[in-house]
Image 1 (cartoon, rainbow, N blue to C red):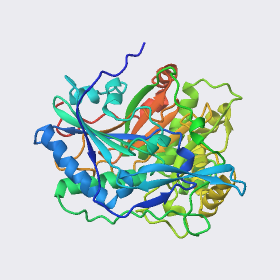
Image 2: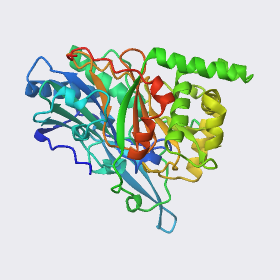
Image 3: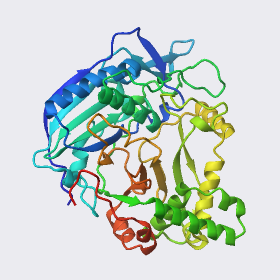
Image 4: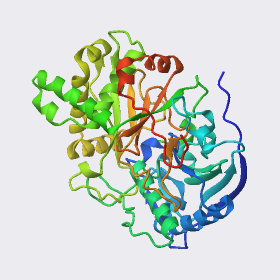
Length: 462
């Protein structure tokens, strides 16, 4: 049996609001609405002991958060629903918007008695269950943003450090926008000045370039469709490190295999992401012991901003991601074709995600709206999420860079992989699998040969 995470003592809960401003409604569009039934984003940063008592630290973070909300005012809003009626007055659908009325965000101060930094990031073992307790809003889905804050921060006091856990409504924004907001908050906390970064852009994108309008769903009351997570066999989670050298070796091995097969185009377009994803996809398939004739596919989250023509500004604050997928392949063929072929298959999926395909997908969804939950992906697949491009370690609130980044229990499933930047230029890779599959993966020589030993973060004793 897996024991639940130890309880924490919540010392205080504060509501933080932006300065008063004219009320505004921001429409929830076809990029935002599909995830209404998914969980909030849960990401957090582990820090060494700050140079001031935690109570004063929370005061400081609260003041800086209020400053950040002056620019990022939708983060302090709530979702509202508008019903659409036909000429006879019957409800034929609904749409959503972010009501930027300054309702506020929450910041919690909690204490984890007897829990040290080393207990949160023990080397060469599973992610401890205590990590789940370091995040607020466990179990909340994005639709709950009608009543719950769309952003909550939890400052947890450890014996020798502090953990900042964040929960952010994923129908409000994606990972790029989420980390932009956190870095703006951190900059204010660090400098006590107005941030020098460019302000966020809230105007919503539509495929036809017209005036922003909310996505209309064919439901009178979509809340009845919410499928909240049900208890399942607990997943095992591990945080693994792949150094820059290890990633380079994976990429070169894939390149040589493609050159030997005559695929010079695939070899020339290889990236570290493709090479790592190939390793994960094939080794997961082997660990699951899929039947030779079972199909498997690999999904990845792709940022649309730079792929659109013209591109969306990097400051676009909302959701601008799509789940791209490789071609389906039989398990036996995936393993037989090798590392290079799988890396090139990922590359083909990335290359096909163009301006035209992004626009076509947005139009197709609007014609046939669908809402997804965390378990919407098929079995036997691999899902690559998050990104090593997110500036997690630049998020310095004033007492140094984080020792580590971690996530909560939200949106986890067997075969889910989340990528983080490593402190040394490599990648940190969070792996979630059913226990029997994780045990088999731990015996996979090809996979483990690429995993690099954990480096001791600065500020921690060896």
